[in-house]
Image (tube, rainbow, N blue to C red; front, side, top):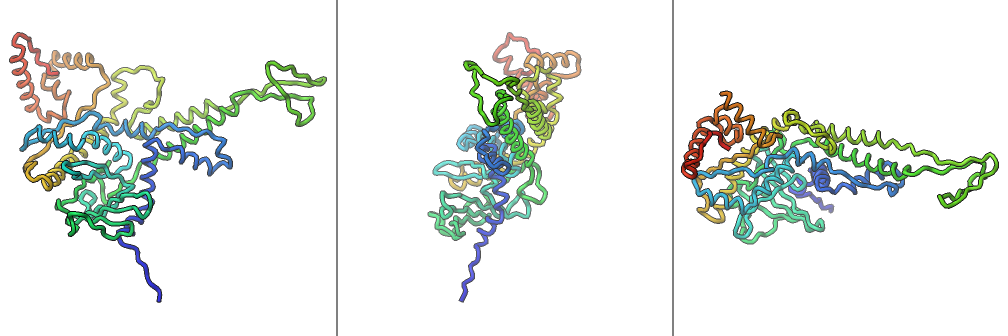
Length: 437
């Protein structure tokens, strides 16, 4: 009698996403400067002797992503309402939130979809970035998944385990998908009543959880790596002239050198062939690919140029229009993610340490402004001129310095009055010209 073996549905779900996870894993390797092995494999497909090539890479993926994902370059200001400000800041320090969120923003820009997981380790909360290469999701609504499965890859296939989360349940599974006993949780219950995850998307999702995109970064990086390998091989092969001679028996080698005399037969000739490697053309092709990659990712086309001449602040401002517009989109998204993260943090922390965070406590996030490419003196001179001309008031100056922090003129006006009163109390003899720094 034949026995029928069926694959566990959890394992079937995980295996079905193998191609997507492989693409995410490759992107992570490229971002982390682990490109040489892949470049060598690409060379092996085209050449019978790949050892003739010197493989080296320039990581344009990391350059573009880090330049593009600039939201957490300066830590945002978080204001807590309904609880002590110092206590709220202490929770975020324990989470190492600014470092983790900077990494999360970069990996989300690279991979298009990631997730944050709020964990409890020992006596304190922790925050982790879950990337698509270890993530599977069941979701009709991408922003509100019903089930999340995280793969914990082991040294051997049999060591791999899975964390299987739903709103009501948590099950640790072995490599076959079978439940594993978790100390302290025999009923396999999710103690939080919510998924302790916050999905992150590079753009608003429609009906897909794992957003497509980013192929241009990887394919351009591969093209650049191959071009660099070919360039260096051309340099090595043609860095020196090739000796040649006529009038000698075919196949006879010449022993040449500056300390040797060469004897040729009558009418014999000797010389060096001039190298003709298309070095300049190859460099221009590489530079073209890098500039186009930057331009299509909302960056200045000369972001990779190391020898560009100094430009005026106005010219640099024009170049950054696309980047600023993209940043505003990111601010809108990540302000939502920060609010969702705070609610999950409250649930996890209060589950393990009841009463730590008041249920009604809220969080407001003020992201640092993207600075103009102007010197401090230029910015202050521009602001003062506008005030002197009556085009601006000091309220406009303050809002231009921090528009995200002062959404209304009334807020900026109240803050200016507070600063003026503070300055008068500390320095009563100092004239206040009304322009807030």
